[in-house]
Image (cartoon, rainbow, N blue to C red; front, side, top):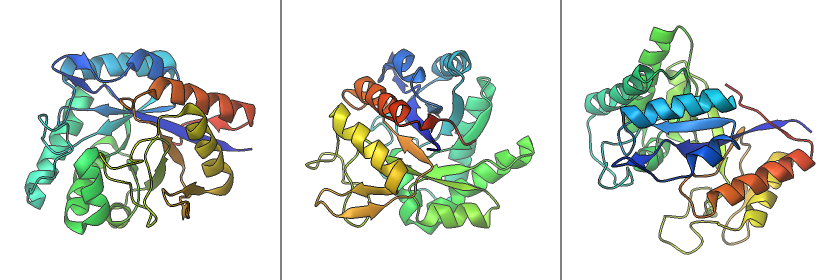
Amino acid sequence: MGSIDLNSDLGETVDGVPTADDDAMFALVSSANVACGGHAGDASSMRDAVARAAAHGVVIGAHPSYPDRAGFGRAAMSLDADALTDVVAQQLSALRAAGADIRYVKPHGALYHAVSADAGPAAAVASAVASLSADLGRALPILGLGGQIAAAAAAAGLPFVREAFLDRGYAPGGGLVPRGSPRALLTDPGEVADRALRLVREGVVAAVDGSLVEAGAASLCVHGDTPAAVAMARAVRAALDAAGIVVRAPW
C-alpha cells in the first residue's frame, strides 16, 4: 500500500518549557521539524531534540521562523531579502551547531504562509537553504504547502516536498483556515486518522465547506502543540499500520 512521512513541529520550548509532549511524539513520527531559535527553542532544546531523534530513528528537519519569540512566530514581519536570508541562515547554523544532521527545511508559522504566497520571502528562504546545501554537498529539500516556495526551491536547484495537515482546517481554495477561526483546528483522533488514510489513498482532503482539495502530499503533519496531539498521532499511526501503509521519511 506504499508509504508516507509523518512529521511534527517539535523542540518548541519557550523559556525552557516544552509546548508539546516531545517524548511521546518522537516515538510516533518519522520526521521532526525542530525549532531553531526564531520562534522557540534554544541550544539546550535543540541538543535534546537531536538526542531524541537519534533514539527513535527520526529524521531531523530545521524549522526556522521570523524572529518573533513573543508571538511564537505567528506574526508577519517585513524584512528585506538579505535580512530574511540571514535570519534563516543563522537558525540553520544554530541547529547544526547542536549536532543535527539536517535533512530538510520547513518554515514555521507566518513565514510558512509568507513563502507560499510571496515570491520575495520564498526566494530569500530558498537562498539560505541553498547556501547550507552547498556547505553540506547535497541539496536539502524544502517542505511546504506549495505556491511560491515550490517555484523558489526549483529555481535554487532544491527539491520541494509537499505536505498536508492532518490537524488544520482547509479553506476551499486549498489554503489553511486562519487560527482562531471556526474549524481552524481538528482535535478528534478518529477524524484525523480518517483524513490521513484518505490523503494517502486518494490524495485529497475535505475543506470546511465539504469540497475536496487536491493535496498530493508526500508528508503529513500533526502539530506537536495541538490539543490531543499525542492521541491523534497514535490514531494516525494505528490506522496507517492497519492499512499496511509504512510510515517512513523520504529524506
